[in-house]
Length: 65
Image 1 (cartoon, helix red, strand yellow):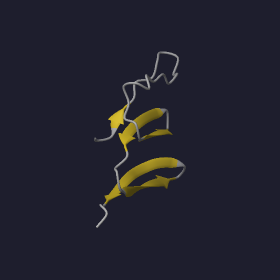
Image 2 (cartoon, rainbow, N blue to C red):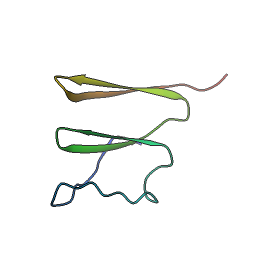
Image 3 (tube, rainbow, N blue to C red):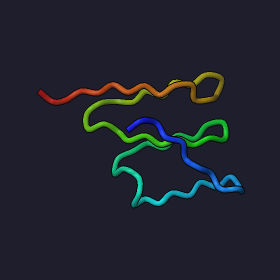
Image 4 (cartoon, helix red, strand yellow):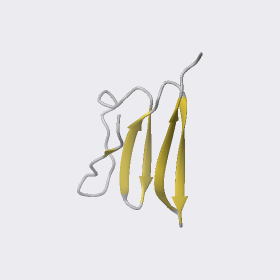
């Protein structure tokens, strides 16, 4: 799953239906925006910030041998 924007309400409130999001995911909020991304089965995420704002999210995936 790619990074997806999450719509905020007119009053800038975050409302999620937990039945519609992946079982294992990360929600990142920065600079008045919210985004969601499903986590891989095996791997890690790195969240890179610059001047107090999220600049990039990097995913490294793998699988057990």
